[in-house]
Image (cartoon, rainbow over the protein chains, first blue to last red):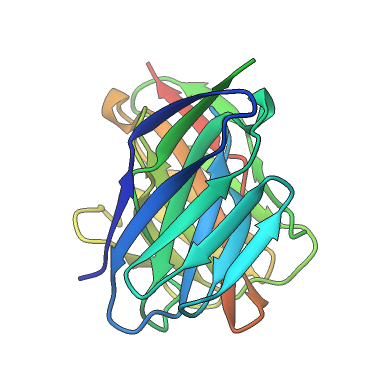
Length: 110
Length: 117
């Protein structure tokens, strides 16, 4: 059974204070690891897909990396508008199903 | 980016009534869509897989007679909550699968807040 564990559960940063979110996973045959952002009362917004160990992707202040056991979402010089819950998910089979972690609630204070 | 819409965005109904939620992929065709529910401060819980032209596949513990799913076209899936009760109150989110790169990506709708009185 695929498993995804995200840490920390909550993270509070000051504006400009860089940090990283962790996503540890176990999956038989990784087809893709996904990062989403979810704002309160809204559906998840797609950020990145990572396919293989060593891969990195960037978007504005966010950078996602992948190893064989975990993924990191690095946030550089965050702004208050980066505050959200960040969800990590893996696809292990061929039926498009995702296994989600419980998310990291990020709060960036001005 | 891919756009997925849901309608309505929120609904309040009386216990015992049925509620239909629509999920549309606006700029791509989706053979597969998913329905999730999310309780406050919890992650997404997959309810069922909706495949165009075939019966939905439900996750263990989800009552298929209570949560009716119809994927009538490549851009529309509907979830009907039949004989709704207060315990069905939740945030329902759909996703549509779009082929991208080496695998396929789920794009999510904005969600529907259901409150059953």
